[in-house]
Image (cartoon, rainbow, N blue to C red; front, side, top):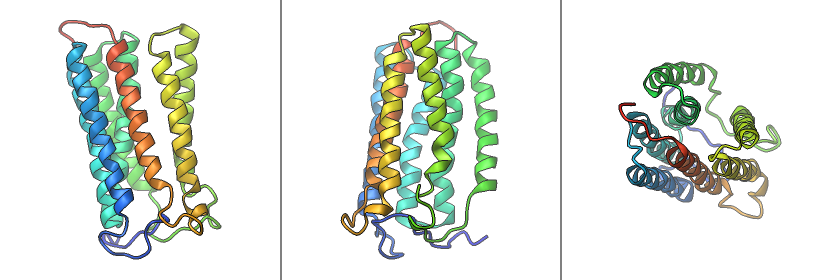
Length: 229
């Protein structure tokens, strides 16, 4: 594997230069902001647990990894992009079960680390070749990989609505924002001719908002319990 093979996937990138996607790269600042917002709320609501700290850290790392990918645009930076994303997804699902559903958070955190490791291995094993893509070759612009995440959010929202859980508003809002962000990701290459900078930066901004909403829901709607990680 060539770790430095250039990857050209987005409308804004017109060459293989280091700073060829400034808007896509800088829009990732939204993720650390979402993490800071969440950590501030965790302090307000007495939820500065280990599991919440890890989730906030991963949220910030999503922005760092994606920023690296849209700056260097090669194989190693692609992994820096996708690994924090799927690690966050794996751990958040288990955290929601623990902190919202009432399962022991310490035990779920350990399971979450294992799940994140397994997810990382799967991502490494299934990642595609580093080459330029086009909307003719893939009308969804590689977005089909996020279908499981959208399905998980829809199911999560449905369950919280069915149970009347306090987190339901946050879950539904996060699901709607993620569906909208997927639309911007899909349309990126389709609009190059009329909008050269593309729409992928909105995928970052809206995903950061989605992450922020999920974290806020988890933090604000979890019962305060002493002695739990």
